[in-house]
Length: 132
Image: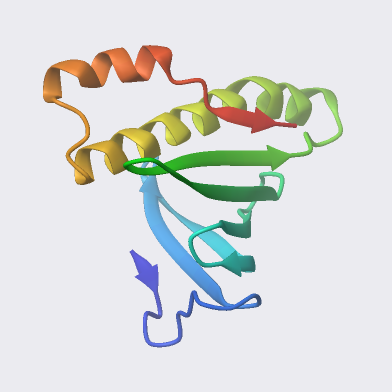
């Protein structure tokens, strides 16, 4: 859910949106700030959440015969300290990869690219890009 939808903007660098969602019986807020937008080419933004490293997102769009290619990249720097670093390099990495795969599935489903039966194959063959 978008927090304060009346003030939310997502068109030019500097625009911000706060998303609120439930996670493990509590409410979390994801702060997003648009850093670059070139229509039909690239979208870049930063996300911030309490107790997690900032994440830098890039979405690339390339024209190809019959449509476009979509590439999603998420980069973050693991935090210092044994436990935070362990969480960021293991649990967070797994969650980020899972969210990228789900994003691709949602897009493919929305555009009618995937049949329900081939969705599982897509999950197994998709190699999301996560850099840290």
